[in-house]
Length: 256
Length: 264
Image (cartoon, rainbow over all chains, first blue to last red; front, side):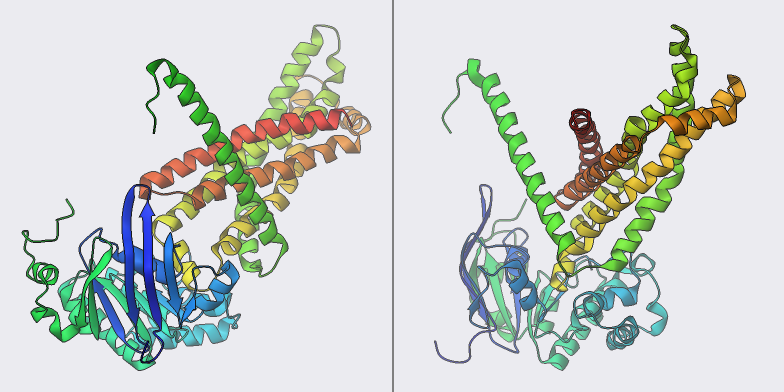
């Protein structure tokens, strides 16, 4: 292989749930410092792809490489160590509702890195400022925030420990177009600011064009197209064209 | 899969249920062993343990106390009535004390905790599973098993014997109130008879039971919550399974422990 070792690499990854085969030998990689967006319809394997990479799910077969190292066979302890360089923004925010906003943002600092609560709060407040949330929000509980603010808190939590790799799971789902664009802008700003590698899954093309250096399209558990984000509208690929134009007719079967 | 003749379908169904039961027992046992290992080895989360001690222990005091006082009172009346059939009313204080410390204190406190604590644990952890909070914890380099399960198991094992001590005292006091206010027993004599009759093993065996029941209560709550799936419906199902399985296991463990203690 030429060029630098990919930050992330899926090699022939298979995953099934009972009789339903979700990933069918998925091959994909992301270069260090690049932002890859995986698009695809509902039920095509986007979430499973990102969860296997984040260590939240085990592949049935194939390899998942991080910095060239196969992580599929790692023990829990080593996997946790590896995850210390990851951040993840979940679709629903996944904020801990029994903790305040700042405790959510500082969760890793307090519980894994054993940073003092005082220092953790200062760093959490700083991370909140980076996503345009003032100190007044820090002592609120997640249930007191709007959906857009919860996404910002989730983003602040994902970037608080300056990760090398961030996963974004449907970052704009459920948000109005204005808030969605604000979130996209913040994601871009944080990813570029940290210089980290990012993998985003979405079916929001506006989001994909904004945050991605490259876009890959998944269909039926395999990657059917990959290219620069700017090429998405002239890919010449029937799957991508159907997806971009939102056509009911084409090679992609609607998930209903 | 080969087609099973209609006549053998019930046999197949029973066989599948038995295998499922063994599979489930194995999973619960592994979950319990993993829980104990997480209690014994670092990293620990003392703040979580403190929170659970207060939540499970302090906030369960009213429900355990009320259960004990009414049980002690009812037990006193029943034993007085039953003892009267062979002129043995006067041994009522001793029988109340024995019944409360060895059996009813730990069992009823555990059942109340199965309803209050096991259900709450299953619902809370199940909701965290449904909303990806457990996955989020793993991405934040924190083992959810150590953060969520181990403190709950340990706190309940610590707190249950303490709650049973309270239940024993309040239960015996319930019997005392009924005996002295409605059955013309002398209060001081009642206390003396109880004190002279009770052996330390009567209380200690109840406290051992309490610790085991505490482990069962927390184990069922955590296991069903941690392994829940299917959103809100799954959380509801986990809660029901936690309470029912905890109650059944408490009764089963009670028999086994009583049997073991009797042959001691």
